Length: 166
Image (cartoon, rainbow, N blue to C red):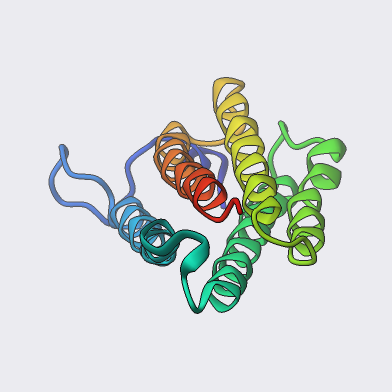
C-alpha cells in the first residue's frame, strides 16, 4: 500500500469526482452490514431480558461475534503497523494484539459482565482509532467509519448489559 493510497486520496476505482471510491463504499457497506448481528442479538436480549429462554445461547452468540470483531479490529491495526509507513511505531504493533487478548478473556466472563467488558473494549478501540486519525496515522474516512460503527456497537453492548442484568 503506497503512502498516498494510505491517506484520503481518490483512487482510479471511481469515475465521478464526487463519488466515494469503490473500496470506501465497500468498506462502509460491509461495516454497516456487520452491525446486523449486534443489532439482532441485542434486540432479542432487550425484548426478553433475563426471561429470554435462550439467553445463554444468545449471550454466547453475541459474545463470540463481539470477540471476532474486536479481534478483527486489532488485526486491522496490526496491518497498519507493519505497512511501509514512516509513522508506524513499535508500540502500535504491540498495542494491536491487545484487542484479541481482551476479546479472548471476555469470552470466559458471564453475562452481564461480558457485555460491559465488550462495551469498554470497543470504546477503547474506537478512541484509539480516533486519536490515530487526528495524528494522521489512519485515513480520515476510515476514522469516520470506525466512529459510526463504534457508537452503534458500544450502545448495543450497553443495552445488552442493562437488559441481562439480573
